[in-house]
Image (cartoon, rainbow, N blue to C red; front, side):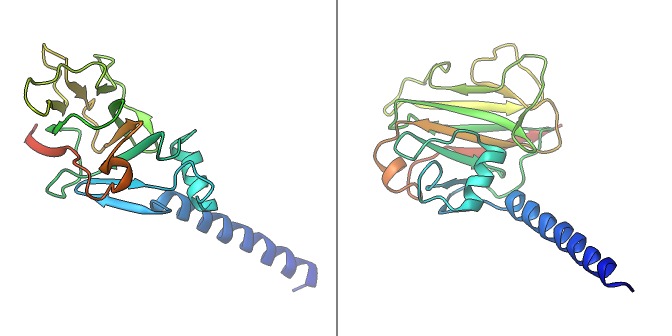
Length: 195
């Protein structure tokens, strides 16, 4: 084999293998200072100068313009509280208490951060739209499922997709949400039934 052909094959092979490995690494796992709390996970170095190059690449791919933790905490769940993968053909209840924060929202995504099309055009629920239960501390229950009920307050449709994830955004967090996210009081995700 001629020398130039051998070098060309080596360069092309290196680019393909290296590029594939980089794409796999960025897409495959959460990076940075990962914290797990029940079904929820968060990365405490999002939006900071401490974030690694891989963590920044992941934010660029899945979460544009991530704010630092003192401004916003982002928690993601791919499983329910029992550890089973979230399935869009099932109905879940996300139940929790009011957060020590200025504002919060829960949004349903599919795949690489895409909102799921649904007939009700509802993609999230949060402190600005929910009617909190009158208790101390104030509690909430958000239903997530394929069947759109008549009362859509506190409901996020799954569109019947086979898999989805939930992102909880908490803005201007205080207390454990900011100081100790592994021990913060986060909502449970309970499967009610499957279609």
